[in-house]
Length: 201
Image (cartoon, rainbow, N blue to C red; front, side):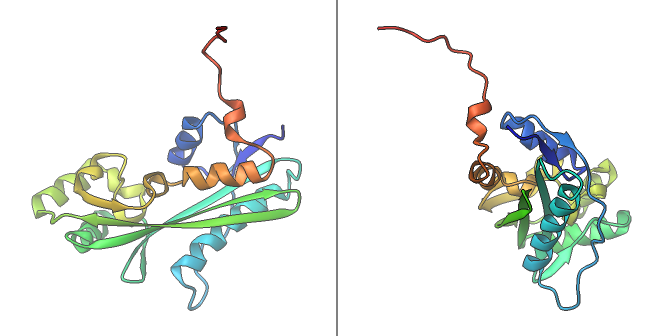
């Protein structure tokens, strides 16, 4: 079986791949993440995922390379990682009581080809108090996360409804990732450990 490379430095994506039993190496891709003029959030996210996978695959053509990108989108605007505490507070205030989209694309580069899937999940926040926002920002958790929150951490208490893929909101849609790998001849389940002894009737 070919080796798998994750073209991302995200510890959350690595944890998700470990969750489904994959062995892989990490090699973050160095690409320009500047949006193109008039580029839609959907196209932007998928383009970056593909570029990450292809850049790393260029030096390791014999491997399966996974690239991914996630954006939090509110009213068509991409909400990136906050530059400071003030921006984090402003972003959370905008998300309070509103429904936003989390767009995550995953791409698999293999043998000169690249397949990608875009997953869009709707996330609904309840109304947040100023005190809650201030306490959350003071925790430091929002500072390295798109949209200034992490659903898998303290920020999970702000979400009152989710429509779509939870793992995609964390950073990698597991079902779609497994399907891409299966399509490339690498079914994830074949690598799962077997702890049950065979039984004879």
